[in-house]
Each structure stands twice: as C-alpha cells, then as structure tokens.
Image (cartoon, rainbow, N blue to C red; front, side):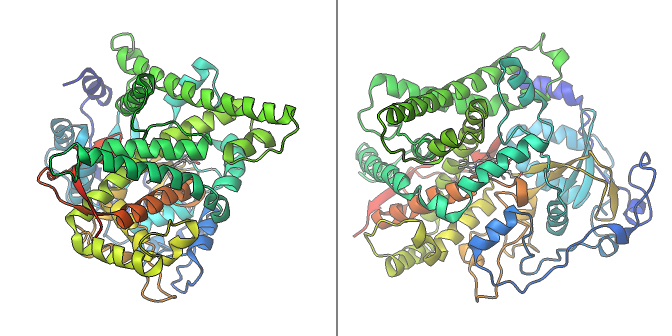
Length: 561
Ligand code: HEM
C-alpha cells in the first residue's frame, strides 16, 4: 500500500462507517441531528413546482439554469415535497451486522473503485445515508429527485466542499483563488465576469475556428500514428492522443495560442514539455487527496503535500507564462496604435474586471478543469463507437444527411445534429468524469424527510443515479437515442445524470467542452470509421481523482470509403 493510502487510512482511522439513517427519523416530525433546536415545519420548506410543459430551446434552458431556474424534466418529481418523501423509501435498508465492513471493502478494493463502492453503498444503505470521513459527517444522496431538490434550493453562492488545502497553497504562495477554490462574494464576483464571456452560445461560437484548427491537426496526427501499426489503421492509446488534443484545444480557448502538442516533428524541448504537462496532470490527481491528510502527519509523511504544491506551482507557472506573453503582445499592439482583437483572455486583460492575480488563478484552475475532463470523455466516446457500430452508423448517417461528408462543422451546425449531442450525453452518463460532487448546505434543509443542518457536507452520488433503472431503463446499455426528443414538448433532461452539475455553480466550461467534443467527434466520423482492432481490449473505468479509463484504449481509424 502506498504511503498516501496509508496516510489516508490513518486519517479516516478505519471509520468509514456508513449507516442508514434510522427509520424512525424518516418520519417528518423527528429531528435528524439533535443539536438543531427547532425543526422547521415541512410547509415552510421552499419547493418549486414540477412542470413538464417545457418547449424552450436548450440554449435558453442552459442560460436559465445558470441563473438557477431550470424546470423539471420528463418524469421528474421535482418539487420533492418532504411530506411525500417522508415515506419509508430512502435509506430504509437494514443496518449491516458489521458497520466497519464497508470501511474494509473500501480499503481492500482501493481508491480506484470509489465509483463502484458508491453504488455498493447505495444498494446496502439506501438512497440517503450518512457516513464519517475522519471527524466529518457526510450525508450521501443517490436519489434523482433529492439531488434535484438540493440543487434547486441553492442560494446565490453555493459551496462545493471544504477547499482548505487549495486555500492553504494559495496563502503560502501569495496566489489568488479562482472559480473552483473561491467562495462567497469573491466567487460570485468572478463568476459574474466569466459567465458573461463563456456561457452564452454566441460567445462560445467564436471559439469554433480555433478549435477546428486543432481538429485538423488531430486528424493529421491520427493518419501518422496509424501508419506506425502493422494494419495501418490502429491507433494505440488514444487516451494520450486526446490528452494532447484537449490541452491544445483548451490553450486555444484560454490562452489564445497554440502549444504544438499535436505536431509531428516536435522539437525535443517541446516533447519534454508535453511530457512534463502530462506528468503534472497525473501527479495532481494523485496528490489532490493530500488535503485529506491531517496537517500533523505532514512532518512524518511530507511527500503528498510537497507534490501537491509542486503540481500547483507547475500549473500556475504554465498559465502565467502564457498570460504574460499575451499581455506583452497586447501592449506592443497598443504601443503601435493597432486595433486590438482577441478572445477570452484579451477581453479579460483589457476589461480589468479581474485583477491580474485573479486572471492567473482562473486560467490555471480552468486549465486543470478543462483538459482531463474533455480528453477522458473523447476517449470513452471513441471506445463506445468502436464497440457499437450500429450507433456509429446512425450518428454518421445524420451527419451526412444534415451537414455532408466534408463540410467543416461549426457551432451553428450542432443543433441540427441531435445524435451527436445524444452521443455525448450517453457517454457522460455511463462515464461521468466526476462520479460524485459535493455541496455544503448553506441553510437548514429537509431532504428526504431528514432535517439536515446548515454546514453539512453533502455527497451527491451521480455515478449511482446514472445507473439506476428507474432513472434510465436498461441503464447498463449504451443507448444514445434515449436522449433524443420525440417532440417539441418532450424534455429529456434528467437529474439522474448531470455530468456538468446544475445551476449557478455548475461547470462554467460546459459549452467550451461540448464544442470541443462535438466538433471533434463530427470530424472524426466524417473522416474515419472507428472500429475494434485486435489490439482493442476491454477497458474498465477507475477512479483516479476523476473517473478515467483504467487502460489504454486502442481502436482502428479506417478511412471512410
Ligand atoms: C467533459 C468535460 C467537462 C465535464 C464533464 C465537467 C464537469 C464539471 C463539473 C461536474 C463541475 C462541478 C459543477 C457543480 O459543482 O455543480 C465542474 C466545474 C467547473 N468546471 Fe467543468 N467539466 C468539463 C470541462 C470543463 C472545461 C473545458 C472547463 C474550462 C475551460 C471547465 C471549467 C470548470 C470550472 C472553472 C468549474 C468550477 C465552476 C465554479 O465553481 O464556479 N470544465 N465541471
């Protein structure tokens, strides 16, 4: 067992004690935690009414969602009135004989299977249960309607989790916080600025040109890589290829520059630099748990914290170099009296709505959030397309019908290609990059009949809800068409699978990620038939900070006839 795992074991001291909330407490009228003096009357709990009459365009919905006002989807019991949920449904399973058993399973099976352990705990303890992580009480929720309720009731500045270790690093180095690590007013101010530039479809559409240039390089690179294999068609380890694509894509959007990750003959120093980037991302995932290790253990086990700081140093340094370059470029244009045109970074640097330190911090955190997420999703989508030729055929047919075999797509074409959108949604349902998410309650809440005090850490079990049959019939099957609207009145959004989160604190890069993935998949399918190769092995998911493919994905990219 690695030192890090040992340290974590100590940190939670074997007390990953999951227990269902006792049945009696399910009844409205009983208090969840005694220290809460007054239980609010159920009728006082704000609930929004569910409505299925929703015909608004998806673009509008997303903007609306950002403001926290999205309507319920098909089949959702959105309002989640506690009276109804106060029945014996959630959490009603029997208490296990040996309450330490789950802890053992957790450590025996390792951190790589946290997503499966999430499912196992839900099966054992029900859709809402409490557990302890060290001294911290965590309430896990794996019920679509309860997740919807929690997210709909959020205030103006929701808090995801305790970000002490991220804050500590920033204090240590005199760095600012970015959207992921900031809270309260500070977060709200930055979110307002960034959402103006990254969420509206028309702003995101301006990134199409840059992203398409990267895709051209991706396709060239695939042609080169497959020549290295005997069959002339297989590309091994598409994971690494898509890492480079995502790095290059996000750099185009965030830093308005190209890095050269997909070049064929990259100079030695660039190759080393890409390798260093891959390593930095990988080591970040390993060390992101460093914050869970108590400070008093650091002198005994210094490595995780040291590595955590080193990964951040690398990420900040990388962003700062590119931001400073842009700043110098802008200055030189201004000195020459030339017109200033540019994208996100240029606008941010010009507008001065954020300080330079805030720009460094936000770009760094977006870089961290935007590379692996996109690249894992593309790797899985490719894998699933190879495994499901019938799905691939119908997506391809739609592309040919609505766009043509050769037309380079842009953001405006996507609404005419619902299968591409469905393909992404289904890939993220089966492989949600963030298998779980967190919220710290900002007020006392009644959820599923329990009174949960302000300040409680909630764990939203998205992986488990994504695989629940009542949310998604034949949940283990890859069926992108489940996401297609059958009519204008039809709503297919579903809180069982919200891979980008929901509401005001949801993923700010959702539209950028969708653009990078949709455009790449369209062009890949226009150029190639993606097929199983003798080198294609079954690949499972593992949790390594994020949900990632456990092995290299190898598939054929055969030329389209
Ligand atoms: C497939 C790709 C992606 C997935 C699945 C994904 C998923 C998520 C999720 C689940 C969250 C947490 C939302 C919540 O707490 O409700 C999040 C937050 C965030 N994501 Fe993404 N993301 C992706 C790509 C990106 C990209 C490309 C960027 C930036 C260019 C980005 C930037 C961020 C940031 C900054 C946050 C924190 C937002 C805040 O706290 O205000 N993400 N993402």
